[in-house]
Image (cartoon, rainbow, N blue to C red; front, side, top):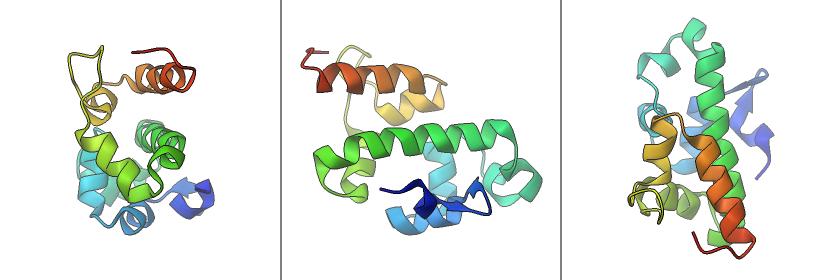
Length: 116
């Protein structure tokens, strides 16, 4: 999926992300480990932390979408599938803890045939 679909005015736009994932901006914020006002206040939305968390979530969804066939199924995996090797935490939980890099490395390892 094109990153442009998630962006508006050069920033990741929670409302666009929510529309594509058929959820709410508040759920997008929670799924990325952000407070609700991080996606409601313009100055918070522009912050490096908010944009970074949204970017990490989108990177993960884009990486697994071909495996699941749709953004909705990728989002369902992200939110609910326990990951082996991470005490059965979900990708969402790890991103909320600031461990998106670990999730991306896990996906790369699985794609390379390494059993995680």
